[in-house]
Structure formats: C-alpha cells, structure tokens
Length: 253
Image 1 (cartoon, rainbow, N blue to C red):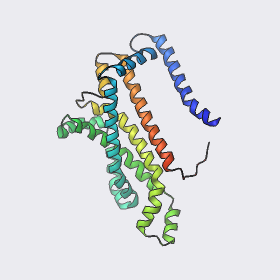
Image 2: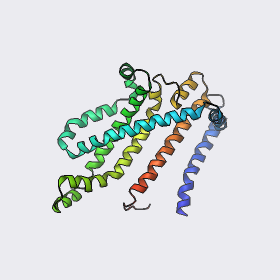
Image 3: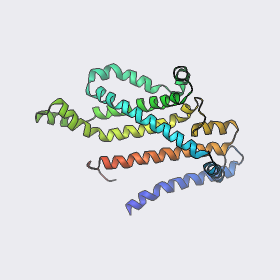
Image 4: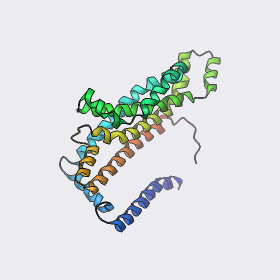
C-alpha cells in the first residue's frame, strides 16, 4: 500500500499543476498563456514531424550527457585531492567557488573567441557547468566522512592508501551519485545558454527560435520536453544509486 501511494503521489502532483494551468489559461486566454491542450498538440506535432523535435531531444540529451560525464570525471580526482589535503583545499577552494559562481552565459563571448561557434564551444560550456557543480559536492561529501572510520583503520594498521581505498572511497560512493545528479540539473539549466552559441538544432535552440516568432505553445512544449528529459535522466541515476549503495542502512519514512 505504501509503495502504491509513493508511485501515485507524483502523478497527483502533476495533475494538480496541470489543472491549475488549465484554469489560468481559460481565465487569461490569448497566446500569452496557451492551454495544456495547445501545448500538447504543438509538442506532438513536433515529435511526429520528420527531422523534428526527436532530433532536437537526441542532440540536447547527447550534449548534456557528454558534459556531465566529462565534467564529473574531471571533478572526481580534484574533489578527492581537495578533501584529502587541507592545504590544497585552503589554496584552491576560493578559486573553485569563484568559477562556480560565474554564469555560463557570461562566458559565451570568450568561448566563441577560443573555441569558435562549433560543437566544441557548446560542450565546453556544459562541461564547465558540470565540473564546478560536482567538484564542490564531492569534496564537501568526502570531508564529511566520519573521522572514526579513519581512526579505526589506522588503529588496525592500515596504510594511508588502504584507508583511502577501503574507507574513504566506499563511504563517498553515495556522494558521487549526488554530484552526478547536481551536475545533471545544472547542465540542463545551462543547455539554453550553451545552444545560444550558434547552434542549429537542440531543445534550447527550438525554444529560442519559437520565441522569436512568438509561438508560445512551442516554447512551452520545448520547456516541458527539457523537464521530462532531465527527469528521466535523474531517474536513471537514482535507480543506479539505489543498486550501488544497497548495502547502506536506511530509515524508511
């Protein structure tokens, strides 16, 4: 019963939001706030079209996937170094937080100068966003590992490498998945900015093009497709996380 309740509640939440949207669209009317039916029709038409929204979804998902994989892979060693060596953390933590605070769209002029307007420029923006979002989560999670485990390992005669491999790494596996999820969210949020760099296809490009022609229902459809794609990718990471850390004890609430 509890499992069924957890499965149904998210759909109830979506139904409530769509119902409120329908009421607001009916009250306001016009093209400024299209109804859910108009948005669904625009999205369905785009998905069925040859060389339509399915191509944009595939390109955007691929870009985000590359950005997250490369960004998280690069952040993993740096996160462990910053967490394991306090001197390095004191030196580079302000720089990491400075770069993390920079909005990717502000980097667009420099990215165009150094990388041009090709795919490399768009991927760089996504890798940048994923890297600095995940590295902070990683080293904060690693530093939060309880000292009692490290002291117990040293008391049992384990070397620093063995403590790192057998204590620190397993204890931070859940945090690695959290870093990936954060990087996914940031990368999808950055996607529109990345695809502003002379992209010819993609969901962000579709939204910008539709807004230029004041096709509001297509703008809403593109935004919803970004949300659905991000939700599905996050769900895959959560399922993998549950399998990878099934050994952890959990309190069911």
